[in-house]
Image (cartoon, rainbow, N blue to C red; front, side, top):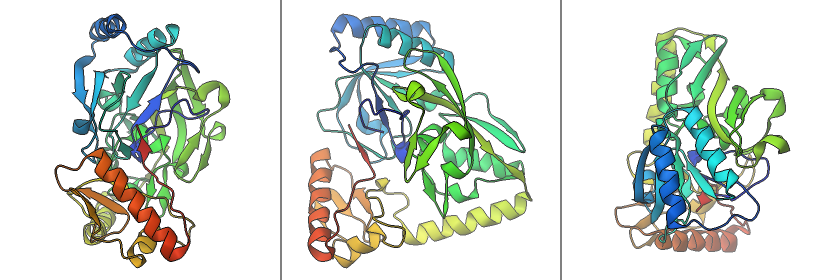
Length: 336
């Protein structure tokens, strides 16, 4: 979740869940101490939790990054609308963060307040043929609840980190599936605080990307995702999820601090991880940042890696793959 004012994009997560940065105008002004204080007061009045100078390393799966001047946790979509409307009316920029699973934050941090959507978890509705999932709901929890209710359609998301909102914003996918294949509607709060409900026909999907209609996308924040579900046997769903989890544990650094896949696959038949492996990059290390010995497309923070360490390691891997295979890898992560 990291590009600024991308036309036609909502907040994004790391894969997504990737964290998202969204701003309210083309030429935003800087935040003053007085403006931060006013936004803090408004947030508290809207029932949001607020923290000053909050380290973003606490809220990203990579565990690196400096502070945000203000972090807000709205508890309901109406609060999101009120906060965005207030910022937009003053041409002040903001950022939106989900699970922080595909975000690389600079060591200096960011200059804008961050709306953390992970408290938007109320309003779950699960009943075939569709289910409504609040944007802050972890994808793992959404899958678990659906399987418990005997509803299939999300098994492909087994092991997918982050939040449902971030997964939709970044068209997250694994095991041959992706959000593009299951989303039937997105509920958004536009940058001016207005509400939009966009059906699947209005959405344009591509590899790890969602584009919204131009009149809805700039600065929009996803607050709920409607997905297609179908009745299946709970025991069968649980069995398939367990098989995929086992495969994930065998092939990926589960439990280590990482941001998921660092690079996009150059082509459907060309995996970034394999190119990185063939270039001899597994185990390559800068400070506490290391390319996983288990899967070449995962970069691990062993504890004290800085964002600069991660950036240096990414650059070294790209150079090695370019020299070995003639391929320029493109990052899947978003930078703040």
